[in-house]
Amino acid sequence: MTDLESLTKDELVALKKAVDKALQSFEKRQKEAALAAAQRAAQEHGFSLEEIMGKRGAPKSAIPKYRNPNDGSQTWSGRGRRPAWFKDAIDAGKAPADLEI
Image 1 (spheres, rainbow, N blue to C red):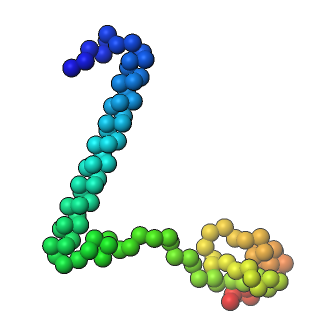
Image 2 (image 1 turned 90 degrees about the vertical axis):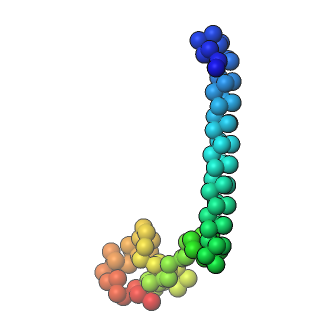
Image 3 (image 1 turned 45 degrees about the vertical axis):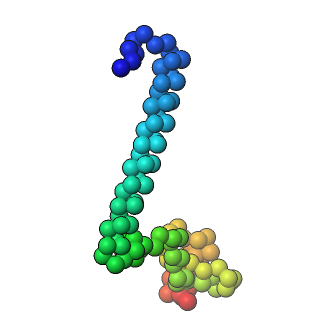
């Protein structure tokens, strides 16, 4: 065991970097081992891990629900922040139902 009290600041910083690197490497190896074990377990039951966990990909884009009456190429799904054209139409007296596709 190293006597930390006898080390200089530079030696302690170097030691800390080495320990951080070793911890990251350890965690990576553990995750890889866990993934391999999960894949083996899935295969033992006749599945792939992807079949069990589902494929991870980009989130599916939402289907447009509203269309800008002044520019048909601008649509909005009703999720997230309201686009300026939607706010402007509502402020002008239109109802959301008037903008539905």
